[in-house]
Length: 126
Image (tube, rainbow, N blue to C red; front, side, top):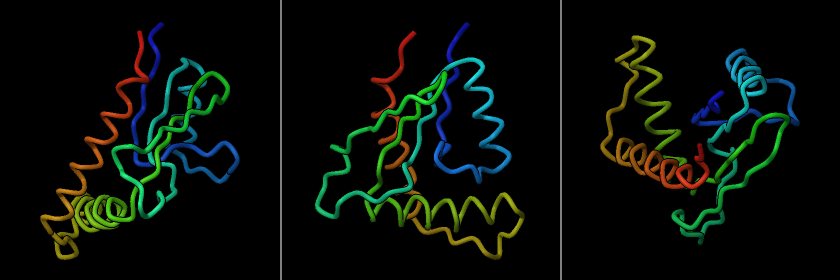
């Protein structure tokens, strides 16, 4: 059976039982099939660190691996606070009046997605 690969903004936190419904469903699927869940750790990297050199932290959790990476303050501001919260959320909730279409937000979103792709690639195996 193939492994399940999940990439999301945040991953489950095995030390925190207060997960929402989506996290519980994904966790159950990953535990049954095996796989990897990749995403942001929820932590900010050191201010002087190079985002491209951020190391992925991989943690075994039952039948799956949790792989996380820290984000720089710049990436957090543009990707998460900016694009995710000021573009995606309002648009997908039909609140275009709340959307803020700032080019720096979309650049940050693409930058973090490229970072995720580069860091995930070495973890993928048949």
